[in-house]
Image 1 (spheres, rainbow, N blue to C red):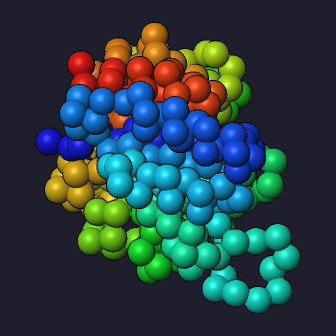
Image 2: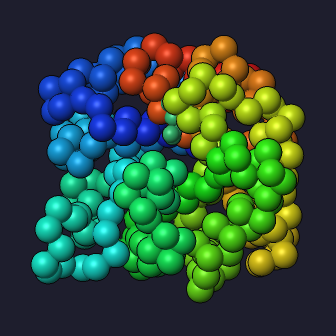
Length: 253
Ligand code: PGA
């Protein structure tokens, strides 16, 4: 049985005090005895250290939203894997569609970042997903296959134990349009079959594949009950403690 993983991607929201308030709201209101999933919060870089301090005696883990693949040097504005580790991170989101679309990140760059994360001891949450245009023109599976094969080039079966894949259809992110449970399940099954071909059944069976894109308290349970949906990557609904907690509880239904 795969363990479910529920992660909040805060994006560019919350300064240090706002982050502390949100994390305290989660910690003070959640009943951890009801939770079997792994729970991760991914605040902006500036709040990572504060977040790590606050979750220290709880099961919640901290992730970053991006990093660069070089170790150090003249890369103005960038953050290294070692810096994230020193701020208390266990996870890092890589290849989010906003990074791909707004900041021109290529599959090749994302691949380099995945390798750097893995060799540094950070677990990548590797995001893939098609645009509406790609889905409607029938190239969705080709796009996903390219993102996944190029993103995971050179990643070994052993390293795959540390990787989470997040399927996030771009048309569902921040739009209120969720993929239906059937649409999402179909793609998750496609991804798992692809991983079986690239690696083997063991690797595929153990891989956590999260769904992301307008996950809310009122649709989470149905999505999370699909056989190949192993968790959620949540944007908007992770910015309020009560809705984030509701989604975490939905994974237990
Ligand atoms: P959303 O964002 O839940 O606000 O759609 C999800 C994401 O981009 O990770």
